[in-house]
Image 1 (cartoon, rainbow, N blue to C red):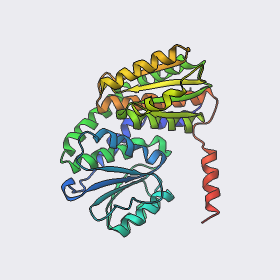
Image 2 (cartoon, one colour):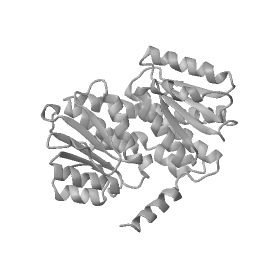
Image 3 (tube, rainbow, N blue to C red):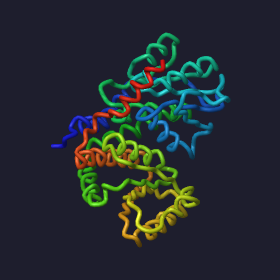
Image 4 (spheres, rainbow, N blue to C red):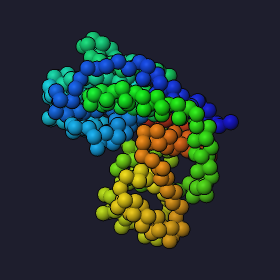
Length: 332
């Protein structure tokens, strides 16, 4: 049994989180034609769903989408902006700051939370709320916010019913294959076990950038281990010039297969790094669809928990983050 069983139990609620969010979804009644932009506010485990959602809709959503992971909205936010605020606890100070600015600017607001100050304010101000279930760490509650965001965006486009059907299929797929995904994650760790004391470098294409960032965050928080993300093709114009000699790193390449030129870049990098006997793991999607993306997230989440076991660390506790929050409270 894993030493981090609580986090594994949370991971195994992956499909439940999707079905819960779907069963509790109600229409927001907004249409993209009435607005000029969408802004999503959120940080950490509450913000990563925004990046995955933005990427999923990048080729089809008709409005510009911005993600804010700090204290302030961009200057262009106004009454024609839809602002979606994600805070699992409802008490994230940066997101609460954005909330106040969005109200002042007259933005159309939507909140995704489980409670806290965010729910209290949204209820007081008559703002639409989508709720998840409390009791998880935010990073292990991804599918509450991600499902709600995907539905919100789909409804803005008039495609909520199609998205709901798609997500129900995804939930069934993950539920049926979760055990296999975990075994694949364990086998993946076994492949890199000798090199894993080194830092982890994740290289993703633009369609899997959010998944790559999620993977790094899970390794950092769950396994207390260094992980860094680079995105192609941009990284081929700079980072590649650091690939000389023996680099103390394990490389994971996340490949959607959506662009042949980028696929060729991955092939070149693989050959370049393997000349010096670096460990390069190519994770290539058979098909770029929502089910494959979420299945990959499940596998990589499981990998981070098995890595935590290997490193004999507690994936549940985040003492440095807790200490930072206590430190900042002294300046309130």
